[in-house]
Image 1: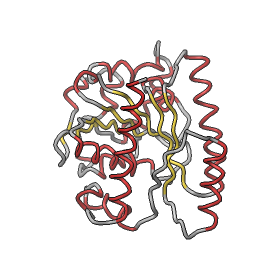
Image 2: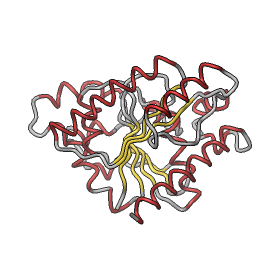
Image 3: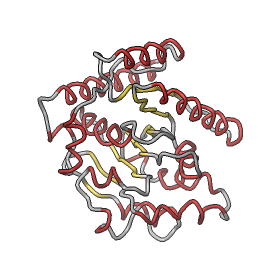
Image 4: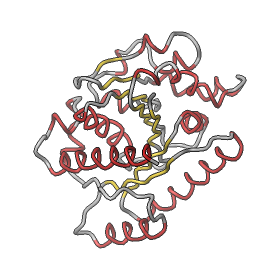
Length: 259
């Protein structure tokens, strides 16, 4: 039964889509099957995996509003065991359409129930906002992974997101099993990066991945070619970091299963 992980941060430009595409890619190296749900109308994850959202006739939006079975939407990526539920600009209007529906906060959770037996992990690339789509993702998720750029303003965005997660817990009865932050765009030579890392680890002990994702031009280039970093720059420092992240991620889950 799949573990659902919402990759979430209301602040844009923190590497959220980068993490959503690359961590699953490396999990497949360890024989894990993964589904990525692109839940952002900008469709950056869809594009990053080699699909032109303008040429994708049906997307997660059509499943969300009940127009089509979600199973029919699944696209296979270049990596065996890594599938995608694509997004499109149609999703931009979904929040307005969902407002008048009953149980509007659980629509994504209902969609993902049919996929849980098929995969080991389901990742949701959330929009950079705290609206109804993000609430749907949090309700559907078992865990939240929060990419945090190594800069001071990112910590303020993290506080806002944690408040939203607490609201979901209290008002929607959602008990998220795990919550963990990941430092992205990290440069160990930068004093600011080092200070932000220290503050984050001190304020949230035990809830920050030991692995950090470096600032690297190859990570920015890979989406242009519709490839993950694994295929685009297999010998890069970024590739080594994501391999380390996948190993740490799997070890954390193995340990939690033993408890």
